Figure 1 (spheres, rainbow, N blue to C red):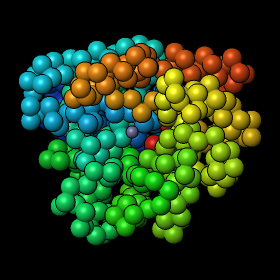
Figure 2 (figure 1 turned 180 degrees about the horizontal axis):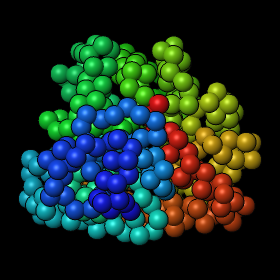
Figure 3 (figure 1 turned 30 degrees about the horizontal axis):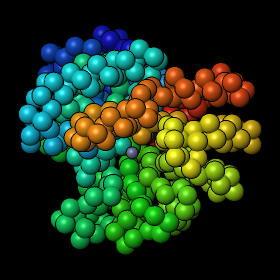
Length: 361
Ligand SMILES: [Zn+2]
């Protein structure tokens, strides 16, 4: 954890902050790195909700999670349903502190505007828990009517606005672009979002993470569009890739330079899971043995604050994966070690790969 003083020292040395912007904006803030505006576009920096952070400070990074998405915006509309906002924040902070205590220092939240994101919530829980949080711009699968009709150019403009100026009416900036396709094909609307993600990534140097339907080789359709737009594969991670064990598909994508988000391993805990979690973990080992340790991300796609779920559904989820966002550190990584993945390889996957990927290029 970087204290404010340490960060200020580093940031001043690196020319990130001016004394004035720091004093005006951050005089009252406790720990965690401070935010500076405008964001400098310089090598080695990752955009977090509290400001630009040296990539070497990211540490162990969970690359696809949902801290407050699905619920946090709604919690503003009906705070009583969460025991009030303060209670909701307190619960999230407790959970994030527990995750930090087990060695995770950064969480990437892939909840864009259509997943009820509340970026002030991220800011507050990051400050209070000490967890670095990277927020996203982009588009998931629930566009409101007002967005469906927009053009690729308008989406591009919107994504760049959230990266360069800030999300909603804040100056909290996105550090990654999230886009999604629902199935094996790409709908006309999804195509606009994918093209816009590609253009915004090229314009800003911010990378792209996607939601794919891996069992239907959905990633291949996405990368066709990214390639047509001229995005470097090194700037794209294809999420939920462990939902398939089709090694022809997976190896094909890493050979082309794409990173695979192996972020659904815990879904294999379900008693009726088609792919048990150990099998998913073994695909990771296979990718490493084929020479692609630098093309793997680990995460949990966890929604630990999803208090909006009816109680039964929530219980079911918690029963299936009681470790939540700690599944990787408690179950998956010990199992990977058991099947001979080395500490160095774990370090590469959890620390080096995210640090390289999330750095603005
Ligand atoms: Zn997700």
